[in-house]
Image (cartoon, rainbow, N blue to C red; front, side, top):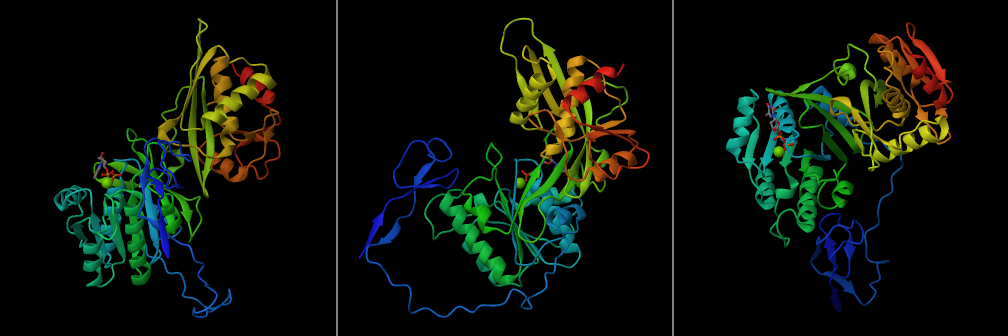
Length: 455
Ligand code: TYD
Ligand code: MG
């Protein structure tokens, strides 16, 4: 005897609830709960301890199939993937609308096709004509990519089943796909999950590398169920400010490689160009020393990137609540730094508006940015420019100490190579770069002294 029980799935975060509610208890979104296909609950306990086939165990060092990767033809894409596409793997690629996901994947598909691999590009969002126009604009129209506009997973899998498995299968996007075995409109949790499941199964069985394009919600997470992230092998996000030229491809999860490598691209008239050496990219035109600007030697995976951090402080006359705005860094982290600067160094930001910007549309996630942000803030507050040829890195503790961070030597080496003359950072950084003066700072107060001693 089976009895059915209703359940409701949040379309924003995928959490399950047994009662309909106006607001999701997990992600606090409104009106996102939708009734799911009834789950079957057996009242009688089935005995699962008999009747199955024995499962074979293997040793961890048993010889397996070696991992062969296929290049996407774009070195930056390969780098973010950890060395290239793994056959049979599933990749989920998220990113804001218009950031360039379709462009990147069309370019990769064309490169693979030109090098003799079979590639299939299924567009559920644009008509084939539109994709062809883009290919023409990118100068890729002659690449033998198999292009189709389709949204029915049954049609797609039937077609693929009748041909040799492609090296790369692009589904743009998973939210537009539709399976006739599942109820609900395309884009709902059950549709997205069901379609992804079928496509991933095809990839695993055929050995095709599958890329699913995923929409992102306004807070940046991939729309639809989080389960999608569990189902795939690699989760990538394509980031950047649409108004800026630069785009960063990052892997957030990778079952076949490291997750801290990035690929850097520039969006140009001819599509995405690879930026092989991005270390100077995020320094805006810096010629005259300006108060409130500090350079931070960031590290993305194994690759150093020099980033300019800009702070602006506006004193308020009235007693209005001052604004704090941060672009490219963590809001909470800036509030913490301001508090530490007030408590440990006696500086006052309380009656001033504070704006912080990371140049070039870059998003910093490296904890070593604290010192550079503090330097920019102090410099802006005191209206004293920092030395143009200096870089700053280190983590700041609540006690105002400058803490050591990973790869100090690598950061300094890159800064030295690019003509910077002085590095400021935690006291016990070893492996200083020749040609670069290194000054270890113990406390935030030492930073304030340094800034104040500048003319
Ligand atoms: P697209 O790949 O359609 O973005 P997504 O699939 O992530 O939504 O990229 C669209 C944007 O890229 C569009 O705003 C114009 C820009 N673009 C260029 O600047 N140059 C180009 O050669 C192409 C093809 C697009
Ligand atoms: Mg697109």
